[in-house]
Image (cartoon, rainbow, N blue to C red; front, side):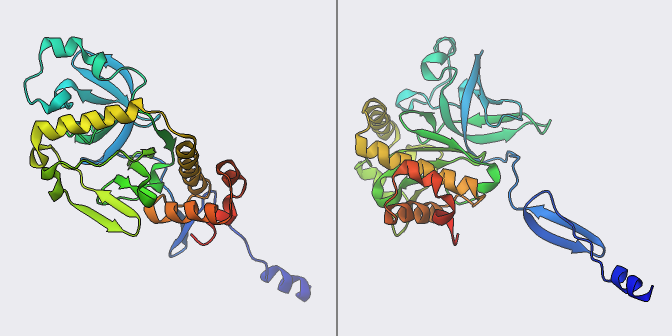
Length: 287
């Protein structure tokens, strides 16, 4: 009997959490803080990537995440072609589908959150925002996108890519658009580290040359949208896309550093882009 009692005393109860995260203990209360938060909460100033779901009078409806009501992008909050600053007219309202139509992807900034705490209003008044074309779109849980000074990344990985890391977990990537040589753009602030260059998010282009520079940037984007990718460019973009997928599958934060490491490691191991998703753990080991 004594032996049986001793065996019962040495029994331990194991607790198994339903999520992966950090264990927190407060007296006898044990909880697990998840490593990633899958729900996106909008904040003023967030850079987001969304999809146009409807065009109504004087506004577009934009889906940011599937579990929240669509955000509103008013006609007064968009950047008109050529950087023209004027009051929107009835003709502009009639031509809204020439700017953005259902199904288009768009980059924007959260302008305000209305008093109900749910309705989000966006704007694309800067030339850095607007319609996204001729690139690759991928989604990750919003918690994997850390807050950073700028979510625009240009000339990434040896000057090959431009990336938008949406705070809502929607990521847009494309080949790098040719940089402008406009003299007034020389004061544009950039932060460089190895082969990483991040660009600032100006509210308007007035400090960079006004309408003239706006027209130049629009012409460069139009040229990018109309120019097909070469086979090498498509393979490079596929490798970057699968780099993000590897990070998502291992719940690793999507940062410039982690993307670089996985991208270069896949090249070092002479993997083709399609092979990366078959060897996720070796590529992400040590992150």
